[in-house]
Image (cartoon, rainbow, N blue to C red):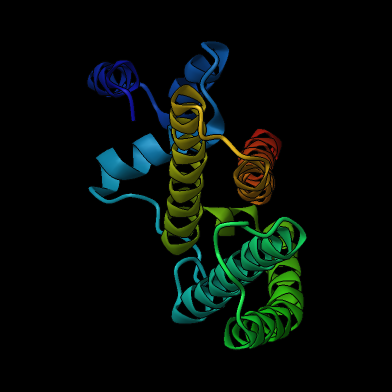
Length: 218
């Protein structure tokens, strides 16, 4: 809570003002009811307002960890498939493809497809469930596990996009930029970029939902 609010409450209490009067004055100054209530509970009770149960619970952590794991598996599998198909479409003329290497590539494709078919629907189901729970109780969006995993994923995505740009510029300057390499970079940027943008929009919408809920408080 900000210092101006605390100082005002202290001075008002010293002047003998009651809670309804202080609340009315703070409301006229633009302070929200939830901010005033949190300030009073912290100062009068020497403790913050407790969060509702369910935020950061073991079950909440389980579903979020499982959802983000499914997301990571889906992204890695999709990127691997894109890379493999690009190599098949534009083979490196320097490297000689053997029957053993071809069979390994096909095996990798099968594994990636199986992982994608399994993990992506699981992610969609879990994410739909988590978003539904947040719509019911917007305060669930403040879960530490959810926010840590979301921002960690955003960080990894931003680093990968930045690394792609740096690598592309490097090969461009060196004059070794090939169509095959450029397609791989574009595929990686497209997949990570979609995930990055979606998570940013999701976090923004959840923050807006919490603001609406706070505004609706009496």
